[in-house]
Length: 486
Ligand code: MSP
Image 1: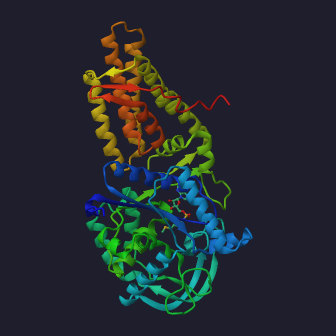
Image 2 (image 1 turned 90 degrees about the horizontal axis):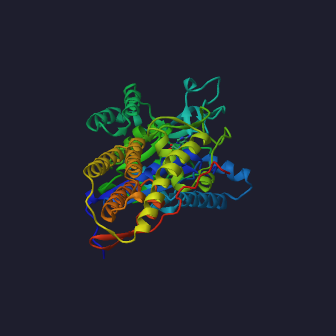
Image 3 (image 1 turned 90 degrees about the vertical axis):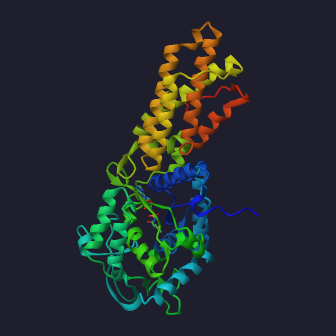
């Protein structure tokens, strides 16, 4: 039996679990790809990575979507969960687990946590009267609406008047504020953390955590006929996937989420964990929103962009690169095919792809390449790029990490153009130049790996050490064929 890795050797990262009322769009892919990059990065550092994603199925949206497609709900959710799984496979997401909230392991844990919270005296029955937005699966206030409509979904919220179970969220206000003070990097980026703090400082109200009229969902224990509020159930997925014992040993290191679901993760989830006497996640990594023409991407607005289609046109790695290079992580950004096309041609086809093709062609034609001295400035640049790149990734500055790395590619291009190895008559000098170029290419490949796994592998596989001091390179076909000619 393998020995279990020590706690600090483990790294547990999660994405939100996605609603199954539709297939993934580019916004969902964005959060998931960022989490995948971190999972791959820490795996390469020899951490034992647990990377969780999944589907949030107990929502009223699921019932409506199943009805609309004329399918029985079980087969509908099975089909959709399959579709999300396969989209993530296509985008090369390396999740180690996939949780569905209709699974037994989840329902069992939800009930256990409900029981613990009840035992702590934090669940009571009360009357809820107010507005509910289906799109958000959340209670809303008049002040959240614009002309009576939810501004994100352009729908009119339902008026609900029900006997519900409530969670004593208000009891945890001080404890939360104290926790935020003690954990200054709990939410990144910082402006998002400030929003959370000021929200909590303004005072917390208890929240309704059951629905009386709804049939689809996890039943409240005790046979009252209520179902558990979908967010209360969904948040628990992070613990139910690994089990409460494991969560107690090592809770999530990072929950990667979008800014729209920050309060649930930074306020309600920690309060639930306090109440259930369980440890809190270490960090929430919050991304901004992709918009199209300035409008949030969403199914209801009909402007969703399919990441699987984009990947089939440009390649998975190009899509992964673009999403992380284009927008500083945490900020909002506008998506356009034109920008994707521009980056594809400039940074990938003419940049990395061209460099890899030129260097590998030269190196292949030289045959066995003896290890040579690396120029001082190349050695320094490689070393500095490695340090900066790693530091930037650790701090979620994906776009800056990539900018730094591309400077190294530019340096390689410049060196190639200046030294003109194809004109070099002196065999030793020529070998040295090509060796230096291979060193650059090899380092680019090893750094780019978490973001562009296939590309990195193609490059790495083309370089083979044949002995301690010599290597061979196989020509790399165009990694990114130009797309502007079709
Ligand atoms: N089911 C809840 C999450 C429960 S987690 C315990 C949910 N699901 S969702 O399908 O609506 O997807 C939410 C996540 O998808 C967002 O938080 C965000 O991470 C990502 N995005 C959805 N639209 C997005 C954009 N337009 N841009 C960037 N990310 C977006 O909420």
